[in-house]
Image (cartoon, rainbow, N blue to C red):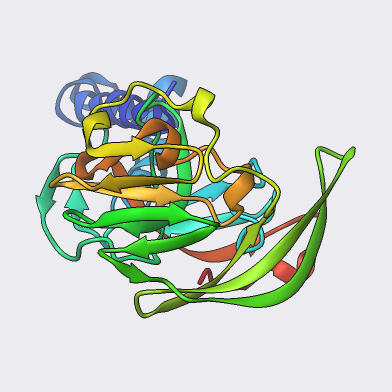
Length: 267
């Protein structure tokens, strides 16, 4: 079940008990008689739950990175913080935007509800904004006809799932005004054609063995993982609509396997 929904239910229950006691039960208790345990617990937990709910809903929310799709930017086991108001203030649970602020920009690392299963949160990098035409050929992005420059940065090796040794090339990619690292394996295809889903807006995209091209619809975003050949992203399941945005990732606050990562900002 959605953690935010659980928090909201607990907030309603404890708040209702507190109000019931304040306006009804307290007046009927004899002087010196202790509060029932359930009233005492509800009144104690209500302000704590309210504070946590407001912080998670409107300010920052913690997440844990479960996979290697964003290596080298994010490692498996990173605990990150996500800014919930960068892209506008949204109502909890239903995620309806009530105060528009900034729009996602190319290069942002963004958390969103996975379009194929909105109960799951995904994290990828914003590659295309509404109206952009994205082309991916020979492991290189072209946006609106402009090649996004890459610079070789040596080999990058890592172990996946404790067993598989993965060898890749690391490159520094210039995405609009934003520079970040990506991993590519030149021997892998740009996209696995058999894994492409029948997503909304599929008619905006064309695929073949050499490249794929997509035009991003209004109100949606095109996302890709930095670990380009080990990422199931917009190439396969399509676009992220604005209403499924959670927030912008900005800080690593813990990684129990590598304490040197604690305190790193997310570029």
